[in-house]
Image (cartoon, rainbow, N blue to C red):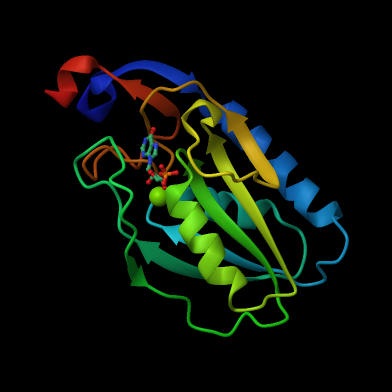
Length: 181
Ligand code: IMP
Ligand code: MG
């Protein structure tokens, strides 16, 4: 192994399993009634790869937009502070909105974004997350679509970073402990 792969201790979810699950999620979204042409809102940066794969698997009319919020920085513990760095470029009033996020952890980030979105009066608002860490939840949020529930471990890859690195890994993995030092 060379390059960034050598920093990975173990692969939690491999590329094939991710791909298959993303297709299933797209089918679930398409089957759900009441969303003739949803607007998918991806939360940057972590969701960009998941969003791209989900969109390509979604055989229906839909639009996309992105918003960016502040992340942990080089820290693996959320500070509870959420900052909007980039907002979406349109009104969502009376739209069927699906928020697309990489991971639901404590729920502080998504709790904030969901409140903000709800105040803009969409017709419906759903939440689709690639990963869920239910053990870590501090804010009461139940996602409508979940790729995988995972244990309480810090993961990277498939859009997820540690200190802005490793987003391009095609799988979801756990870093070797020495990388955090
Ligand atoms: P929450 O506000 O605690 O739910 O945190 C959500 C955000 O924290 C996600 O959008 C990620 O950016 C980041 N995050 C949480 N857990 C992990 C992880 O295991 N790896 C990488 N980023 C994570
Ligand atoms: Mg994120």
